[in-house]
Length: 323
Length: 255
Image (tube, rainbow over all chains, first blue to last red; front, side, top):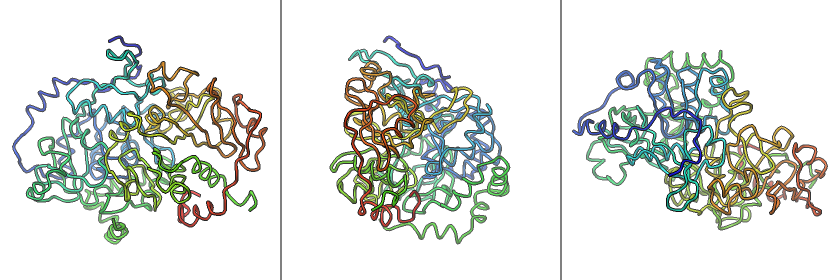
């Protein structure tokens, strides 16, 4: 195939599909108890310079209790698949991100991210490689398929492609230009789910975002869950399982693990808290005050929940509408 | 009703809403497109199929979503799937309309939502493509919703995040984008615009209430195609405003 165009962005995490196979071959296949705390999971599995990714998206089913623990432990120089809102904002706020495969980091209805601006405009994030949202999801899909790239028709003709690490080739079947996206294998994927058993068989309710793809594209997968259910409950509804246990390395019981984000059918997003962050993130001093209060100032997720308060958390459950 | 009886956001929402026909598929992003889709469902398009990037298809927008992945985007929906399913559905040609925004737009409808200034040393780092590039690549007809001033309507965008007609006629197809796709309308606080069928340059179609052609031209940094018969967009009706204020955005989050 003739390469018509190559994006000039750095391939931050080059795909090595054979190494991924070897890695997966060695992964634990026994159905064992993988329960642990956020602190243990981050200490064991997330290291300086690792390439990580989170799912779903910012204020929706995001693995916030794990992200907060990464911040508490100060794991530096992270390379991150940048598809996020609040959770990636917090990592940026703590100055832990070195490189981004970025598609969208912003605050949705509350506008652009001040943390992203400060970190990128100052050069503290030293690499930003551009992709579309589906582009990132397709890169996970390629890794999940066990192939080095996937052909798509996004990004063509744009600077998004120019500043990516994608390539355009002439399709060997039709002759039309087509964009090839490199597989993206994560060192560590982090996903928050509605329920999982202690071995890591996990189910989510509502939209699935890019859960299945990210889980299968991760060398190490940390799953946090609203509740841990018996294995029998998973086996009663196996059609609902998006993540099989053999992908998973850590299972963390984290009720309200997505706070201030939402968990559909369980609790609503905490709009007041999100607004508090939006205000705080506007300058470095108030950003630090926020991090001190809600992350550095608490020992773990349980202390964080105590700080938010039972009444508030209960309220977020009560306002969930009928289906 | 006097022309001052509505604000610019309400005008944008109503103008965009009228571009959403019944029984069609529309890819909906955060903000004005959500309000416009909700209003359209209550006005003239009860069977408008809303499609949200992270998996919701066919939601009934009783309440306004605050995020493209949140539960209101699949409230009473017919499918709750995921981002690949949605964008692949667009890539296969199933999604007619896509709604977009951006910090800058050029005469060919190319949009920038990535950086102001140089990419590697940006003056302002913006959020990035998100789903915009996917929407602009795959939907049959894209509609940009923008505030209208000289800083936003520029001869050349700092960064082409999302493809419009790129450099002009034939450029999308040459780049490998699906034939027959591209920018359709631009809805702003000052005007509704389309694209000249031959040159693919942005063309004024209608001015918003109380706005002159000269004002539109003054607020656009590039030369707009001005046809002989520029129409006047009708102001929001009492019914549109009532639905918008009492039902669509009763908590006044946006309007």
